[in-house]
Image 1 (cartoon, rainbow, N blue to C red):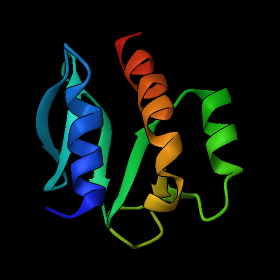
Image 2 (image 1 turned 180 degrees about the vertical axis):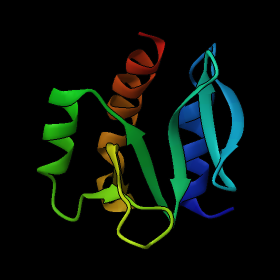
Image 3 (image 1 turned 45 degrees about the vertical axis):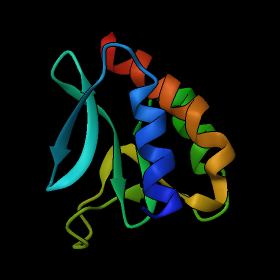
Length: 101
């Protein structure tokens, strides 16, 4: 298994109430029926509240998640490459809490 996917799965499975699912045909984790993280293109994607979103978007190479690739980004979702893997667990926590609100 590729290290990016392995870290994504490890991170998502660390949340007791998270359920593995699919979002646009890609692996995701959800809580309470709401997706909060997704794996896309060897990157982790996070649905974030305003302040965490601002911090994540300030990271080099961060982009808004556009699963269609047609310029229709999902504005609350930030995609971060494996380069920022050290930030993945904390941002996943932010996304988890946000999804439960």
